[in-house]
Amino acid sequence: KAGVTQTPRYLIKTRGQQVTLSCSPISGHRSVSWYQQTPGQGLQFLFEYFSETQRNKGNFPGRFSGRQFSNSRSEMNVSTLELGDSALYLCASSLDRVDGELFFGEGSRLTVL
Amino acid sequence: GESVGLHLPTLSVQEGDNSIINCAYSNSASDYFIWYKQESGKGPQFIIDIRSNMDKRQGQRVTVLLNKTVKHLSLQIAATQPGDSAVYFCAERGYNKLIFGAGTRLAVHP
Image (tube, rainbow over all chains, first blue to last red; front, side, top):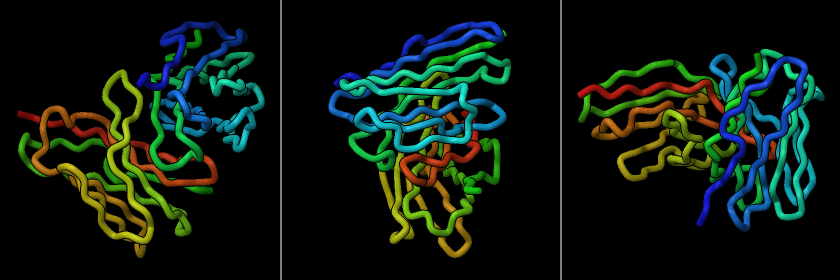
């Protein structure tokens, strides 16, 4: 059974650009959540989707957005990139609620120059 | 606001010794806690969980202890091996999300 797949794994952008990251959850998992990981702030919750609906959102500015498709695949977008957006963006999927066992992907490493 | 933190950022142990990683949480109403392990270049991996109606739970070489009185979690790893070297996170269940601690790096020396 394939795990959570995130693309791209690495990307470099410049300030002001925007970026879209993709996440394919484990087959059958309908909940997808996103986390930002930085050395200074650790793992911070971005948002969670279930059946194409955003159920919860973390304390991030409106430049961070996401969506989920009918096949449970999810994307997140960051617009007007800032240097501080450089981070590892992790996607996790689970069978139902965002608790219990979350299965994480290996992340998308974003560097903003 | 809600927060989950760790007492020690780095823990160095000798191979074969037992390791104890600690975590403090702030929300006394939290009912579910998880420990994750993250190896370099990988996403966090589930290790063990515990519900608030339990004080202790054991897995293979790992034990999680929960002290609700002082809002403290610990992860014990028995007979620590080089493959245990990683960053360990505790997490606390919030509403449709997990609240992670800052992480503790475990370094295992031969």
